[in-house]
Image 1 (spheres, rainbow, N blue to C red):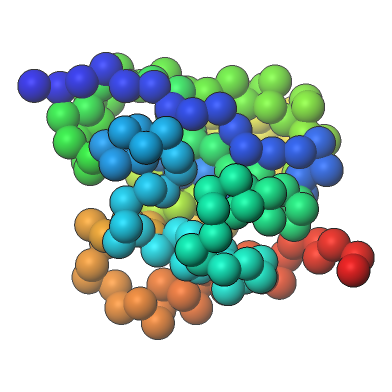
Image 2 (cartoon, helix red, strand yellow; image 1 turned 30 degrees about the horizontal axis):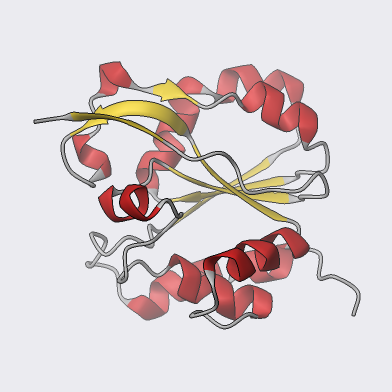
Amino acid sequence: MPLYIHSFPPISSEAAEIVILGTMPGKASLAAGQYYAHPRNLFWKFMAHIVGFHPEAAYAERLLALQTARIALWDVVQCCTRESSLDSDIASASVVPNDFATFFANHRHIQRIYFNGTKAHALYQKHVAAKIGAMRPHLVYVQLPSTSPANAAMPYSRKYAAWSEVNTCYTRPVA
């Protein structure tokens, strides 16, 4: 039976220059109350290499590392109906996008949006892009391969190579 589910608030700071957008947290993430909590999801492993923290660090430490690197984290969908953790199970008519107008008004330094997978990008284009385009015409959009374990067809090396672009685009904090 489909469940009506809600995403998490954004993880960000006002200094964020990049936002990484997923679609909607999966069941493991919703149960844990943490972004990308499924043990086989590659998101935290990739970000640990890119930003420079231990992939097994406490959740709060991982979030702080992203914020220090001026990387925000959020989802395109605020709430929807979905039967499983798969993005393909999201009932299209039930999608309510997050409030990106307010988000971008509060995060004026964001220059790039990275999408964690095809569905996040498609839902952003359908529900958000037209409204935000006029407000922030110079945003750069990059669709990355999903870090979900459901995206098993693409080899790890190709996924990591694609995600490595984030490494070249964030402002490293001064030591």
